[in-house]
Length: 247
Image (tube, rainbow, N blue to C red):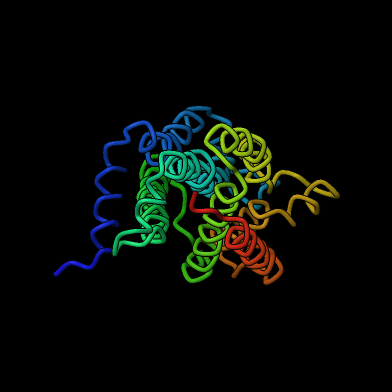
């Protein structure tokens, strides 16, 4: 027999597969952005200032993080707050399938969508623009897992502190634009220097950008960047656990 948790996860997967707009922003938009940026000739030129890499090389990790931002901040919180408002979580509490099953299902489907997007972005960068594959695969995987973990922690915290869908949208937008900036969507973190970069490096996505870029260039990510991501993830998950309400 299928356990209630597995059944809920399957249902969440089917529902998520029907959310074409969410799939577009998470899976397709990052690769489309990379493709558009790659059409700029100067972005494809290797420069000494970037350590012999091109701007498009820097944007591959950035678009990987962009997918995480879209999933964790823009799509997951509205879904969960909607479940809370409509009473879905409360009703599940009276069945063998606990409300936590929905949380697990949402985390899993969004993680899978982000992973699919990341593969597309990395393959696109390699085949179309000649971007090298990560030269430190182990370092890249470690940085990636931590970046995804802290992203989902951000989404969980937004969901927990938002009493309803409208509040969730407001909180999400407040977090969304700074996250885009610190991830390097507007200007890659690698291009920045001095105090600005030091400050950004202590944000979840600033540290993630540093770590992914280090691994892509062939060095294992600095422990401080991994520690920043891990610390933020722990704090945000604790906030989510303490503040979350099922109804």
